[in-house]
Length: 121
Image 1 (cartoon, rainbow, N blue to C red):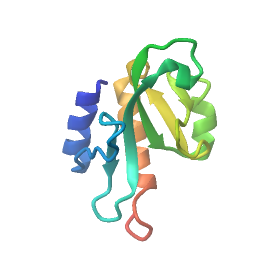
Image 2 (cartoon, one colour):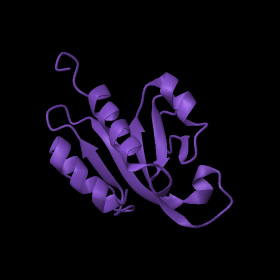
Image 3 (cartoon, rainbow, N blue to C red):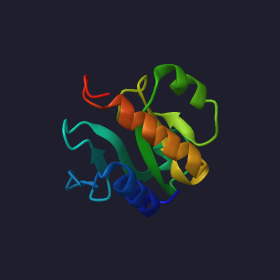
Image 4 (tube, rainbow, N blue to C red):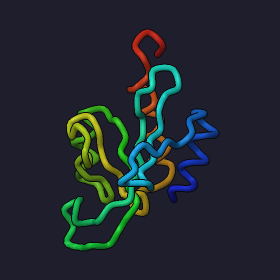
């Protein structure tokens, strides 16, 4: 999925509009729950080198909250990395051009559910 496809999907499915909170990183988009303001996805563009890949190519990634057991499993699959700038045991980074759209949507759904305010699940 592209950044634009993710933005449309999140708006349609979860009603969340991208926020761009960092002046120094104007392309970094945060998606939050409206009621509790918790993040459920962050889309960024970074160098592959920041993911441990020997390349300066810029790629789009997305961080999502994930079941800790699933995080360990996903790290063995192509396109998944330890969370970039997030808690590595609870979040995972997805390289968007390397993971199937249906898997991305499924993980977005999990992240959305994991970040709902307690008592509203």
